[in-house]
Length: 115
Image 1: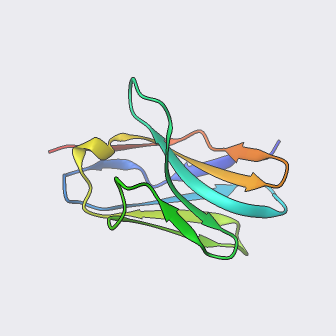
Image 2: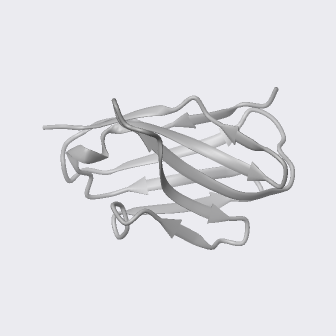
């Protein structure tokens, strides 16, 4: 079964930056949207940002102006550039691909923002 693989997480200081990447281990067809979600300990998974195959983006209010989602449709890769990171951004970040009939999830990558 095709898996999504995230990378780029790590430990950064407040105000720092990270760039997350996510790509499938195999071919996924008819992707119409990609997104990033995050889940902090004791909290529900929440949407961070989405991007359609055409490039339209949507962001959670909490990250708007700080995070940028982008994608490479040819490579089926989605990125999340995270700037001005705050401790409250600490979470496991998951990528998600949506087709018309299915959704795919990665295993997550840890982002920790701490001094």
